[in-house]
Every structure is written in structure tokens, then in C-alpha cells.
Length: 284
Ligand SMILES: [Zn+2]
Image 1 (cartoon, rainbow, N blue to C red):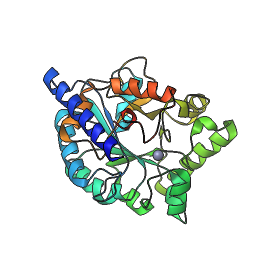
Image 2: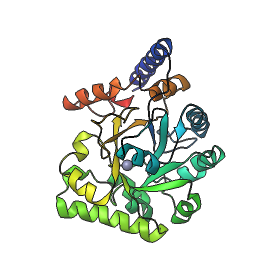
Image 3: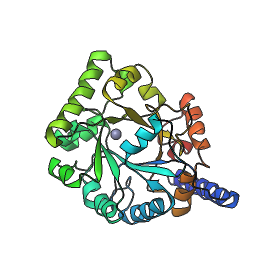
Image 4: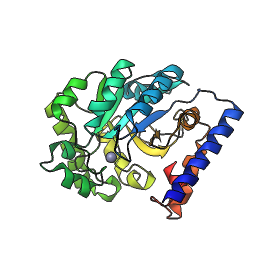
């Protein structure tokens, strides 16, 4: 595993260096995707790195709420240089470590809430079963409330399920329960979904039609910093995953869109079945 991490770090350095030589232009429209911001968890971005990233992102992009971003996308007026920030699942560290920084920089963001996680009597058991980051507690509804209105809420299903695996009625129950709980607890109905797992196989069939009954748009985990092409559906918005191994140069390079080819490489690897921790490309 250590060898893979070193290789991954080297690839990132080369890619960031090449992008710098080519010239960095911030005319893309990236949606950043975070999960956990935590000083100690191995899968999390540290608060220090997060602060640098948000400061940089604020400086280079016009950061808007995802709702505003989606509205522009739906009306074909998504401008170059527009960005948004998102978090998936609903970890408590989004409140403890990320929110103070977001507030300091007046940076709007969306947290996609997995309602079953926040409601679970035993969050550890829920996380294990649902494939969430281990050992991280969920937000409380009080914390969720305190973060509004800077932080918007999105939907992420009730049980963190791969929605392409669900038949109509079960999918409707998953989405309906998620929306109803968030609305009941906060008074606000989410209008945007983040597909759990979120790569092509996870949502294309049969989700899209049903998803459109409930939501105005949806975000995936497909890697890209651009969403302005007519080929990108408002229900298939791409994001940039930000991980613990992203140094300043690689983060900057990713946001320019110059590394969007990584998204295509990941798709090829997925098609070949080479997914998971072993695959260096899929981790970029
Ligand atoms: Zn998730």
C-alpha cells in the first residue's frame, strides 16, 4: 500500500507540474466534493489544508451556492469561473472543523444528508453497513440548523444505497423518506441529490426518471471541473473529489479542468473492473 501511495504522489506531482508549465487558467466551473474535514482521520482532509483550499478557491472562483449553480446550469448560463463546495454524508466534523472556516471566508456550501446516518441509534453499526467513513459520528440536527443559511442541505438517500440497484417503489421510499426527514427536522425540503457512490453504474438505470420527479438536479462522483457542456445533464453534474493526498499544486491543477482526462481514465478502469483501493488512477 505504501508503494502505491508513493506512486500516486509522484503521478500527482508530475501532473501538477505539467499543468503549471502549460499555464493555469481558472475558466472552469468546478464543484468540490468533500466528505470529512478532520485533523486525525486518515481519509479526511485536515482543517489546515481545507483552509488553504477554501482561501484559494474563493480567490480564483466566484463561489455560489449549489442551488444557484444548478439554476444557472438549467438555464444554460453557467459562466466560466463559477464554483461550488459540497460535502457528502453528514459527518459531525463538517460542523466542528469545516463550518468555522467556511464562515470565516463567507463561503457557501451544501451538505448532502444521509438521514439514516443522522437518525441511527448506533451510528457505528450504520456506517459499517452503509459503507460510510468508519468511526466518524454524524451531525446532530441542532448543528445542522445552526449552520443555515450559509450551508444548504441536499439529499443523499435515507440508507446510503446504490440507487441503480433499486426497483421503482423501493427507490421512491428511499428518496421520499430522506426528503421527508430533512424537511421535518429543518423545515426545508432538499431539491438536489448526491447519488451515493455516484459513478455511472450507480445511477443511470433506472434512477434518472424517478430522480427527476423529486429533484431539480443531482451530483455524481464523476471527476471533472467543467459542467457547462450541453452533454452534461443537470442530473449528472460532475465534481472534483478532494482527498488527504492533494497538495496545493495538485488541488490548483485539478480546479483548472486541465486534469479532466482523469475522469475518462477512471471510466476505462471501471469498465475493465479494476476499481477500488488497488487502482492508483481511481484515487486521483
Ligand atoms: Zn455518501
